[in-house]
Length: 581
Image (cartoon, rainbow, N blue to C red; front, top):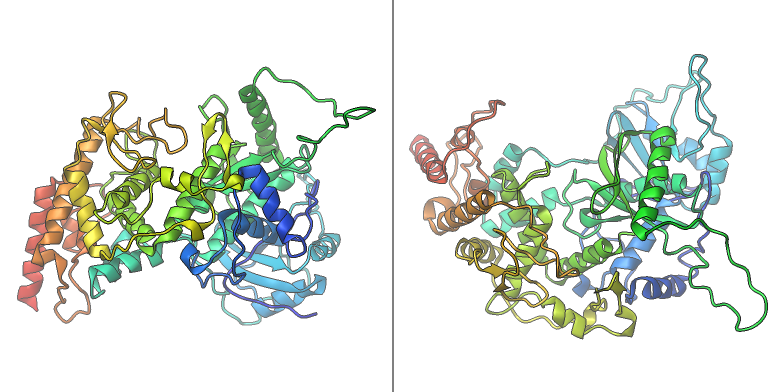
């Protein structure tokens, strides 16, 4: 049999306890689109079917697919894929020859996470049936095994065949970002701040392979949930799909039960009809908690590779949290989180309108993380979502706006875009050809500096940030930072941020704006014949302490120095390098 191996993406396949019966996307593309239009209130514009290059890039002006079309295609790919644990020095050619006995292979790539793994996408679901028929359930004398047939498999060598055959380990695709010190060195070698910003985005953004792996993990979990809800889907949302995801970011998922048939079945006006007998719950929240509790227990007891399962059911949005060791992802599973999905779609749309949007968001997020403005630990810090909304708001407030307001996107919406979720109007246009952008030609360097200046003087004490209106509004509540939720206006997405953290953000904005105006920081500085370049431009903004400028690589935690001291250290470091050169 023929097979096609590519080190660039992979996804899809569904077989386990129950299967979600979907028609082939290629045979019923229009039906899939119309289904999403009815379900999410969104229209999907037909576009090219060519995949992006290596990275998960989106630019709607170039005619790429709509948000939900991309989602459906990747879900369908995931239903045809398997995840296989392999020996470290597996011979890739023999590996693929062995698997191709079960059918044609579209794509394959390797990565490392608690061992070496391969994602293999077959051309047809029938190949998975054949693969499962030839896969054994492990027999261990002193342990009892749960005979759950998932698509997470292990490759074993039971005979004299040498799987490595003297070959080195297969090339593995990166699943995490490079260290901040390595990033600073890389950016320091660029010739302009614009190139630095583009390089940072290229380095940090999710690869196509990583996105495929995220959809496959969702598909593997769906196989567990399908035991109770055969027509359910588990969808990724947030950074995994909105175009602003960084390698290594958490995987947010929601159990989608809205697509189960029979919910809106038209009954005859007269005559007999049937309906399912169902359990009733006191409220939708109680129902969600019950469902997640059961699914969480199944994931804990029967989900291969799922560890540290926590059922956090009393949170505002009930969830199940766990680590998926085969992929290395930290996972959060919620149920029917449709507002969050609309937020993901909105960010996807904004990020695709102009390439500068994503570049600026990645740079600001990286800068914020380098100075502990954001954190992976819940607390009083500004969140990545809040930072992203602040960037979008800033781009709406340019003299010549780069992005339209959400209200304008709502005005452009058609009948199929209508979307009301839990009483909130989440309507906005999905056909990007209707959006006319103004001719703003500012460079990334200009925008980065202007971003810092904008928020160093913003009246946070009086004003709220609102991307729906695209202008400041009086704060409706007393809180240091108020950013209105785009789809739930009564909510402040930054309510957790305290005054101290906001003051640090403003101070660092002020100092970063000043640094970008100084020649010492906004032009390249060559090193002293060592091949190293002194940090400048964006690289200088990412330097968190003087000790790192001097090249000290100590691992001990150091007390953060005042911003002015950081600048003095940077200047001193640059002078020393110039003298040596």
